[in-house]
Length: 207
Image (cartoon, rainbow, N blue to C red; front, side, top):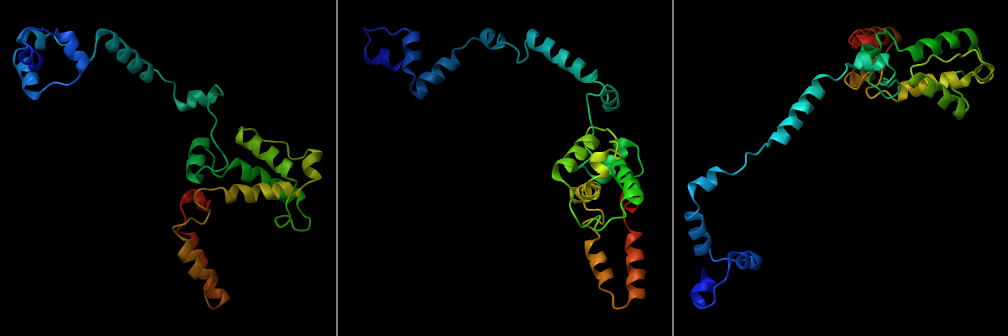
């Protein structure tokens, strides 16, 4: 508009104006005012037929997803053992206590009458091998020579499991109460207080 008014004998087509990229506000208002109603009504809908089909497909796909149980049965989904919340792990596995602790403590009760079973560390590669097997939802054969000759790796695995719990066995919530209980003046009072706090543990932690 402005170019045509400045140079009446030099017409500028709209394509040239669009390339310039700068218009006075009066010109923009003038163009908007003159857009026919039929043009504004013919603006495409936000979701085209093609997009509509895609959305329908995605909804159907999401609804037909297999459950976690089916994925576990097919071996596609594996639940974490180490580093997983105790209550969540037991709920997913259906066990009362973690299998890793059950297997390790049974082995230690039978073979662990050695010096410093929980104090001395086992061989790191054996610990990692055991961890990988439990994380893969397998129950390793702890009677293999490799573990019988390195009994401390089983004790180390137990400690590793407890160390990696997001919420410790005695829980962050009860930390102060346990701290107060062990600070009691006499053995008898200490025993009563610790027993009282243990009763307050969540069921998975209590078991």
